[in-house]
Image (cartoon, rainbow, N blue to C red; front, side, top):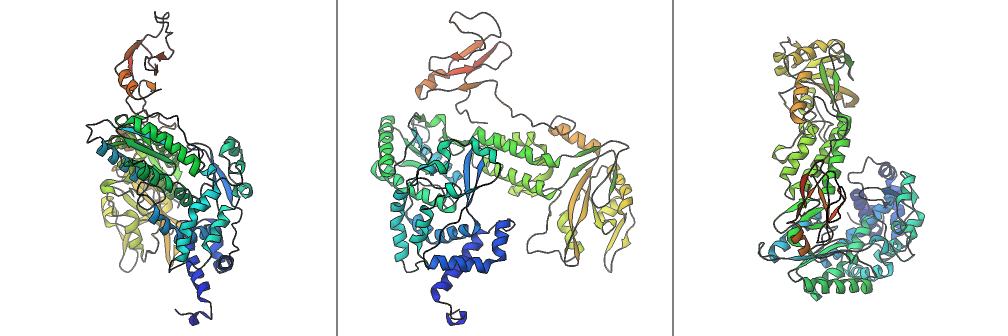
Length: 621
């Protein structure tokens, strides 16, 4: 489309419009149900026009955003920019990110496509394996990180770091149609800590330490955590450290993920000297402070890095990650607990279906089911990058709802009894037969009972033949078997007597053209079969209300010290009596026992036992 075909619109303005529309689509991806996105799209032309005018003349300024507090893994402030500012962030990085990506070191694994936490852990494991000569040589690891990284970034130094990439972008043939330098300077000169509106639980802000608050920093310090530009700018801020370690210091085994980085070598004295030089470089060149009190770690003991315990030959998931996944799965399956109906009890389900006991009714709400599927998918994705097969099996035993509702064979994460919850986007059901095929997914282990108006119908020939119900004509070429929904309890009772569950598919009240929308609502199962299933899976007759405890070891070791001291302490064992006078060494039973290496043992036994040090990795589940 030429310039004249757009009613005389200038070419530069047309380019800004096109770039802003593309940035808006990227910013709204997977967020179209949010109120801010809907409000922007409702008046999209006005918003895009205002942004285009301010960006063209270099007067764009970010608006006050929002700030809330997260408590896991620790309390910290998260800043969220307004949606129109997020569109500008995507626009800026669409032009600046390729230039930054070209300059980044291959040892940087943050905010880059295909280079996330799993890739960083695998890169570290690969370096340990190569430097150790396949486990034949001892490798030492220096782990460091920056203190309060995002809140202590020196903004004038960051502007100097970004000056050359911005100049290269503006001098390129396909230069952006707006003043990129003015937009970046507007972000760096903003004070979101003072202007942001507090949202969420306001009492949580009191738990954030003073040095973790962006508003408490100096005017030339700090980037807000949560913005797209903050991630890229912070990664570019430490890009010089990557080149310093790899080129000037000459270390090949080096991996960095944002402000966490590790250096590997076979000479511990060389690593100690590198610690001093890295600390000095960060203090002078980037005006940052680092944690210098972490001792060197032997690679065979395991390196705690970005959620993994990495060793030369394999990696494990940290205990904290496993416990968090355990709690998350338990919370998400709380809304899926079944209801137990004894003989003589009756319940009416949405859609008018009346079910008589004995039976067990599992609710099939689409939201909790998707949340359970997403939580299990995230956990399996983390453990499949490590040695986590036994861990996944243990988690399955602790969470029987996962095996009951999900089918993850062959790598596919599908809902077992609500396979088609919700109509796929862009694929409307053109007929009742197509809708039923999608919702039931041709499962033959359940009887599909479907609400059609005020009736409950068996629309699959397999179902009405199994229950021996005579069919009747529902249309010109469609047959079914059923009864009014208020009297369909007899079909449910007949199916339960045969030991077959019943999947109740009720109408939601919405319509897709002339076709009513339907969704799986409940799964009615025989009570005896459900009790047997739970007894086999969890060892109880019914799902427990309380959260199951994660299996812990008989004792824990609080390790203080490292290196060769651990090698000596692992061979030590001690007998701890339950009661009695102090021993000859002055040890009081029930108190931590000091070892010669400076480590301590905490006895958890109830009788006289032999307590040894725990395995090398305290985070191994």
